[in-house]
Amino acid sequence: MNQSNTVSSTSSQTEISSAEYFSQRQLKQGTVGWVLLIGLGVAYVISGDFAGWNFGIAQGGWGGMFIATVLVAIMYLCLCVSMSEMSTMMPTAGGGYSFARAAFGPLGGYLTGTAILIEYAIAPAAIAVFIGGYCESLFGLNGWMVYLFCYLVFMGIHLKGAGEALKIIFAITLIAVIALVVFIAAMAPHFNLQNLFDIPVGNAFGASAFLPHGYIGIWAAVPFAIWFFLAVEGVPLAAEETKDPAKSLPRGLMGAMFILTAFALLILILGVGAAGASNIQNSGAPLVDALIKVYGTEIWVATFVNFVGLAGLIASFFSIIYAYSRQIFALSRAGYLPRSLSLTNKNKAPYLAIIIPGIIGFLLSLTKEGDSLILIAVFGATISYVLILLSHIKLRLSKPDMPRPYKTPGGIITSSLALIMAIAAVVAGFVVNPKIWFIAALIYACFIAYFLLYSRYHLVKGTPEEEFANIKAAEKTL
Image (cartoon, rainbow, N blue to C red; front, side):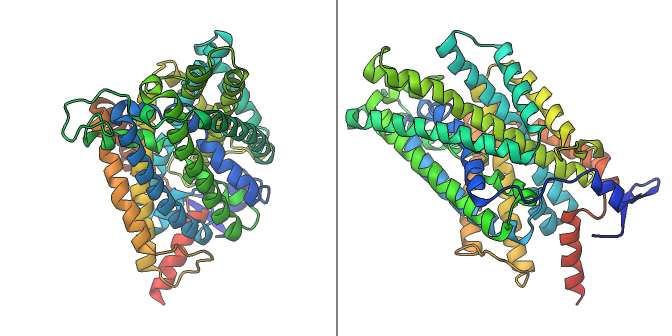
């Protein structure tokens, strides 16, 4: 680390003691092992198994959703192995932002980091809406009180520190996994192939019983297939708090990905095959409604999955608060966002980075538009995937000799395949709802304007991301 830390401005140069600046912006190191990382990766995503994915059936029928899910799973697998390589090269809390910063400089890092931030800041609001749906089914209670309770309680736990928060996340996630196993076991005996194709065939090009909304339905289902995996790429955000990042980060990413893929396919095939595609395509609590359709309202399994499904939603809600706080922490520490957002409390938790997005997310949850919030989150996610995968390709070409404790199988062929699919996924959001897509694009444009007009003149020197970039520049001159 540099002996001095510089914040550059067009009007002045302010020298800040590196020790003073970074001592107020430190995370608790060595608190997370690879098992907790797998739990974190699954926790980020597991709410997508309980609600939200079924809207893809409404868009593309079961066949369209199935094809979209397989393609999206391949994209995420390629993305995760590419990120595994880069995360072991640059184990910092910035995740994808750090990789793009090293590959494309400050603007590339900012574009990636803010796209990720849109994803992580919006996703909890969507999940809060789904939590409300499950609470209404269980207790007859929904609305702003439920959303506010979720944000206050779980932000409070995160303020206690990463180690405590991640252990609680792991425990809640394990309970949710048990619920999914119970659901799959309950559905399997009642599987009927015809139930997958009970949506009436429309008039779109290529429409059939398998694709009732035609070929375009596959594309329209992609954003909701992404909901099965959205945010698993957030595992590297725990890099600065991880024991042995070179081994733990690839294990965490790939372990979580394999578990999530297995659950997505089993739920999509067995759950829909037992309950019927038409019965759950627009459900706010598809697993519970599927069980009620098969067993009736009195069966204990439906009540169990409803209660524990709520735990699954909470696990993702809880863990994505961790993700957005670490993303904001890294961007703020580097000066891309106001530097006060990276201040940490006595527990080494970035308190303002936890609280402020929580307030914004709570206000967004009041819209109760869970499907629209999903589309905004997916917009940010897919933009970030394009930039992260471009970063992998760029670093492979420009820095082939940079130490890589883990190497992506297939190299740039793997990341190029994922890149093509990620670009298609960006466009898919527009196909589903152009209005929401443009709203998301407008939010992103505001972030870009902030960088161009202000933050690029106030970037902080001496951050881990800049150190990697400096090493790269120095090696170029040798």
